Image (tube, rainbow, N blue to C red; front, side):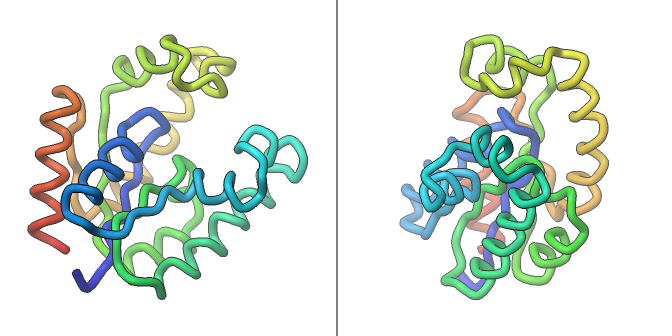
Length: 168
């Protein structure tokens, strides 16, 4: 593997679950940017936002991407907001293949209602739809590949594995 595979998409789209599984199966390095920032700071994303604010959190994501692009290539699940910054989009474009994990908003909402995404659940459907509509054009613009994750986890897993084998 000579380049990274960056996974982008909405929270709840399946980036982390799919990325972790495919990396393990193909014996490749894997990193989840949100998990990493949480581990090194000792705070979850909600706490990081509350204590330092969104700007500092986004700055941390950008610094992490700068470090990762020079590391051994692997699968990198990015936080839902990483693609908001043009700088981050350019970093990913210049150092890898970007895969949009696209999942219908109704499926994302099911996960949120199932208490899997408590931060999003607090926002309510209208706010989540606003975020979805704001971010989806950026995700599509930056993506080299769009992968539909609306047909069940196992189909998504097979699709991502195929993409990684083809482009890694």
